Each structure stands twice: as C-alpha cells, then as structure tokens.
Length: 302
Length: 302
Image (cartoon, rainbow over all chains, first blue to last red; front, side):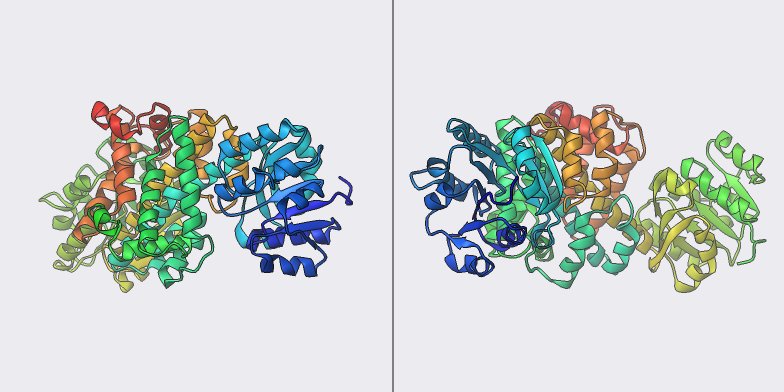
C-alpha cells in the first residue's frame, strides 16, 4: 500500500491517538476527527489535518479507521447522511477498531459492499501501553484480499495481527478474549480475599501460586494492584461491562448460555451501581472487601 | 539434616512415588506404606523398606511424610491406635503433603505438639510432571524452626518452596491456588465454546488472545486439550471437587462467600453426576458441548 494513501482517523482517545501517531510517523497523510476536538490537537501538531465533519473526512480518505467508545457511537459514525458509509469513496477501505458488536460489523460490511467499499472489523487488545508501543494484538475480520491490502497499516500498530475470518470474525474473537477474562477476574479476587481473610500474606501466596496452574495475566498483573487498593484504570469497569454485555447478547443469539460470564457481568454491574464504574477492572476486589459479592446483597445494592 | 535420618513415606500414588524416589536417590533410608501394597513395590525395588502397619512405620521414622487422597484418609492415618500420632517418636517431624483441610492441619499440629512432635502441612502444586522432575511448588505451614530443619527434604522435591506461615498456612495457600483456578476454568471453557459456536477457528483465536490480558496457564495448556476432546487426567475432576469443597467449607468458616468458586463447584458436581469424575479438569468443556451448563438443566442432571 503506497504511503500516499490518505487515512481518515476517527476517535483520538488514549488508544486512537497513539495508533494514529504511528501512521503519521510512517509517512501517511492522516485526517482526524474526534467528538472532543481538543483531544485531536496533539495529532494536528504532529502533522495531521483536522476535519470538522465525518462526511468530509470520509470523502477525502482512501482508508477510514474508527476507534470509539460504544457500538452506538459506531452506528452514529457509519450510518446517516453525514456518516462514513454515505460519504466514503468507491474503492475505499473502512476499518472499525472499536470493540463492538459482531452483528454490527457484519451489517456495516454488508452495506459497504453494496457501494463497492470493503469494511473490516479489527478490535485490539493490549491497552494504552500496547497502543503506545505498537504492540497491540489486532483481531481482524475481513476478506483475505482486504486484509492483505491493509496489513502494512496494522503492522504499524501491532505485533500480533491475525485475520480470524470474514467480517464479524474480529469482533467475535474480541468477545472470546473478554469472556476468557471475565470469570477469571472472580478467581483472582476470590483467591486474594481468601488469602487476606485467612491471615496469610497475599504477596507471599502469589509467590507460591502465580507460576503454576493457577497462573494468569490477571493474577500477576492485577492482584498486586488489588492488594494495594490501587484501583486506577487501566481498563475501565464501564467499558468491561459494555464488552460483557456484547458477549452475553452475542452468545444469546447463538443460543449459548455462559454462566461464568453472566455472574461476572452481574458483579461488575453491582460494582458500577456502587459508583465505581470509572475504576479499573481490578476494582472488583473492592466489592469483595465490602462483602457486596454475596448473593443476598444484590437487592440492597441495586 | 543428616542423611541418616529415616523417612517414613505414606502414600505411594503417582505423586508420592516420584517424591519418595527423589529422597531415596539422595541417600535417605525410606520406609514405605501404601493402602494398595503393589503400588509401593517399585520403591522397594529401589531400596525402600516396606512396612505393613502405619504404627510400625511411624515408630521407626525420624520424619513421616504423608500424601494421600482425601482429608478422611489423612484422619485415618494420623489418628487412632495404629496411627501416626500415637506411635511417632518424641522429637519426630510429621509432614502432611496431601491437599487437605486447613483446620485438620492445625488440629494435627496441636495434638502433635502435646507429644513433643512437630507437624507441618506442605501441600504441593505442579502435578505428576512436577513431582517427577522435582519441580513442585511446595506451600508450607510450619514453625520457622521446623521449616528450616526439613527444608533440605523439600528442596529434593520442589523448586518453589515457601513457608507461608504457621501450621495450617500451607493448606490455606493451596486453597488460594485452587480458588484461583476454579472460576478461571469457566472462562476458558466459555471462551472456547463461544469461539467454536461463532464459527471461528478456536486455535487461531488462541493465537490472538493467549499472550495478552486473557492469558492463563489453563488457556494455554488446557484449551488445546478441550478442543481435541482429550479429557484424560492430568488432574482428576473428583479431586478438584474435593479441593473446591475444602475451599468452600473453609471460606464459610470465615464468613466468606465466593460466588465464582460456588458456581465452578456446582458445574463440576454436575459433570461428576454425568459420570465424568475420572476425567481431567479440562473435561468441563464437555458440559458446555452438551449444553448442560445451562441453569435450567441442573434439575435434569442431578
């Protein structure tokens, strides 16, 4: 893909700003749009062009990349008169990197193909650090040809770039990722609260258990923060709740019931209801510290 | 600790046989007892002495090590007229390496100390491979002096030997280990069943997710076996149910409710009720494949 292809980048939050920065430094002309304009200004200082309207950005880009908060934001950006789909050039490529609904990804791809446009879904994991260091895992749903065409762009942002299947497959894979985290967070909280309540030194317990069959990224990375009472995000509770909601909804469409995921979502909802939705996901430990994980307390806290 | 100290070893199953073998090769005189005599014969061939009665073994050992199946087996071995406590020498050291109840460990230590004997609890993780390769994690509850005295013996069997606190602390730490595994198993099963049901290639999904925040020992080591339908133990379902029962009971004594652990135990009980208790713990995936994880099916399968 020649460097002169213009990239339109929508969503310059913590993740998007780092990702767009890599594209700028690689020599791509980048146009940016963000709901809160000020957050896009550092990229403009680095050479990006501000676009005040999504339609204008889409009309002037060969590739449009979006990474925003919620599926409803994705809908607002892609659909409607000033949206990406109505204004994108024929032959353009659209890439949604938001963690969003699989069925929304396939719907965007369907509508895009009617206009001679290819749409990919490519959600990521790796967080703000992964975005900054261009070490994201990028899970791609796309035709093979579209994937091969934009692969050089993905490689500027991530180290683990995998095409998982046709449009929608990237979002389905991200769902798998969040499901693999969900009930595991209960394990970590429960192991550490038991350690503390039984009079053990939880840090010493970690030394015994984290390198064996109980080991996980969450145990090694989040348990120490839990124990310190460091609930700063990382990954926001409110975003994890969104992701689990997508997963539950998508599983339900397949007739699939996932009790561990359901329980995790219920406890995180309870955490959010207690005003902790802007903490990091490790903040679930607070619920256990307060005894609010108990089944009887669900009516009190809702 | 001088090599001439005689070690009495009770419980020569898969784990115990490997562990006793390391002690024999290090030059310790080892006496062995096992409920099923035949399983102890390979150790006798390596130089161990068979003892037909637990009381005789205890009376002739400086150190008694036990590693058996269930807490009730531990009770049978330690208590009663032909038991370890009634027959052990004054000054002897007793080490229970079974995964057992914390309160049983403290009770044994209490009764032992009345006779001038020290008792340690030292459950392990690392499985049959860890036992064979002397790379176990050994979680020790003991006085500092007793721990220092028998440390050379632990070092012959494990690489991660940590004194976690006074008697009982080893068992409490093993409880933490099993809790950290329990709900995490649901995560792994649910992620993989979602992957398969949504039409993804689950192995390809693993490539995208196992090195990030969703990563765990279970995901990397057990998910591939689940996907192949390889449910051979590893770690038996029936033993995991025992361990989760100990954890739930011990948590309850502290007034602690652990919903993720409770859910995992319920699903594993359902798996056992379906006749799968001699499968490995990764066999929980079968329950999801059959749709038996659903809340409505609980009455059908019990």
